[in-house]
Length: 562
Image 1 (cartoon, helix red, strand yellow):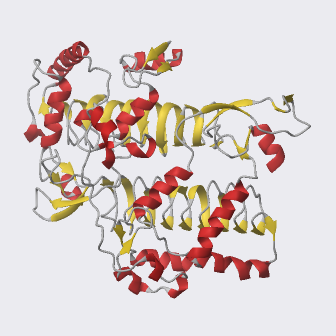
Image 2 (cartoon, rainbow, N blue to C red; image 1 turned 120 degrees about the vertical axis):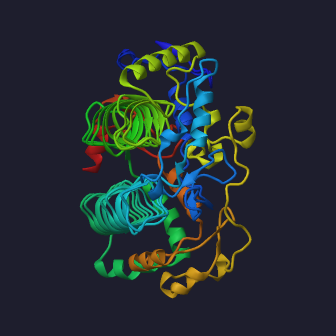
Image 3 (cartoon, one colour; image 1 turned 180 degrees about the horizontal axis):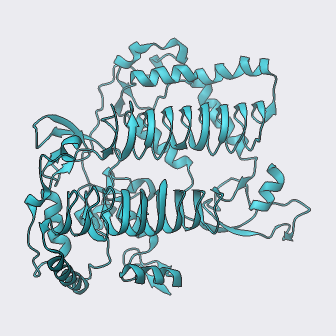
């Protein structure tokens, strides 16, 4: 079955298995294509833009993702928000059948207190967002179960890491991407079980490697050439510690990587799965950054066991969900965001936590049942009113749709949406969506210019933390914190000259996009089955055909690399 997206007008296909899922969830087929559905979810997720404002419960200063002049009227310190000092039921109201559901929901969402940051079970880690079980960490987003982590994203189970993205079970890692079990390494991508690995791509079981690609169980290599231990120890520390030499080495390492074939996807130990960055999963289709999960489709970032779900971002620890985003999803949950442990058997909720059950269209609830628009009902009253509201939403065309862009409390440019769906200010406004004119940050207050910063990390001491830097890309001011200096010096890596935001965006660009193309294997080995002089195997891959990399099917890749 083919449909036309009502937003971008592109045609998209709904498979029979999709129809079966929608029937099970008792929702209509979607009106938007998968990309437009993802974009709609992303506009509700601000991960990295922070503001200062007063806590509306205590009057104390706090850092939050909600600007003081935005639509969210009340913001509480996260610890106080999770406490019993207030009740979201105080904001309950009747449903008005003369008005649309989303209009009424937006009014409720803007009134009910929001937590300053979404941070669960963490210690000495106040300035992190979308994180779980952090300790002694600072300015991470979507990073869990880690200690001494700084400026990282979608990483888990790490210790003493900085500027990493999608890194797991690693220690002393800097600027690593899509890697696991790394130790004392920097600027590596899609590497595993490596130690003292630098500027390397797709290497495993190796140590003392620099600027290498595709190595397996090797040691003492520079740019894919074997060197002596003495040569390594003479050349590599100098290239790493000097910012100028490191910058040139990164360029050379990239050129080296283009000569080595790449596997068409990063799907490991997973059956019947398509997408990228999938580990130990089964039947996960068109999904990205998924771990230990099964029966998923159109899911992005599910690091903690998710099952039987479609169309979600940053979810886990749940089963049977649809458009349920930003947290542990519980059971039978749809159209929800910023959630924890559910809510179960529920629809259209935000910031509802601690095992809520049978709630509809509510905000900020904790341990509640049978609530609609934050008003308490008996079980029988709840079921009757819920049914009537759903029928009303079917008439207005709202039922089965995620929250519309227009009611997001964030400007498009405050959210993660531009990282994957970049739009100009004019395009955003033309769509009728929100745009934030001032996203914070300081400019022109630098106390040091890049040329005056010592080139070598070993020539830098903690006095550098008193300076205000200017970003070499966007001119925004930023500081280096003492923990960064300590970690960079320990690993022997030159300090960055870009602000944390630009470093983050650079890592986003280094990763493959969250979409697939159909391509043919580029292998031309003579002992492979040929089609016009090359392997005939075809596949879906996140490597755009316009890119420079050599992309192989699994058979050809394994033959050449192992």
